[in-house]
Image (cartoon, rainbow, N blue to C red; front, side, top):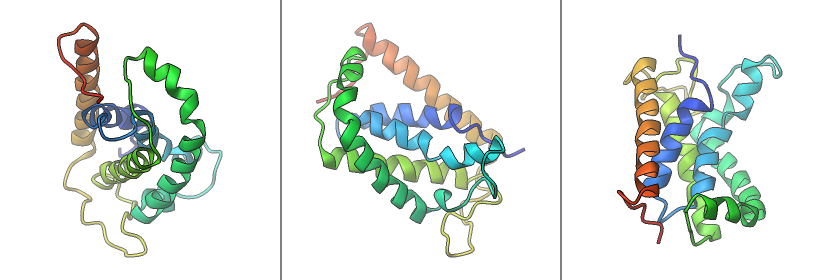
Length: 169
């Protein structure tokens, strides 16, 4: 079976790579980009939208378009997230560039993760090629994404207790 739950598994790499890059990119934008790009796929899975689960949103061109739209949205709402970020101990300098880079990288990572194991996905559309498909199995990708989440949680807890530092500046 090749269904990858849209939130749980993409949340792990979003958190881990977001923490690794927190000094350079906007953390909430990166995490949101890794998960929210599945909005259409989720609607298809739940029977609320017709068509294939992975369509234009799961192509690199679609991810670029999605990241542009997400950048605009995050620039507008990002100030509202400052209190949440402060409560999490993640103090960041916010800029349009950091938000745009986070949206772009998060979207690209999501498409790449899915491209490894979804047989009906064509990430290089309009070209009918799938060079990444089959390099890793669904089981391997689930392990990788869950392990990323586990490491991110450990790192965050370690930072909270002063054992490890998350470099935010």
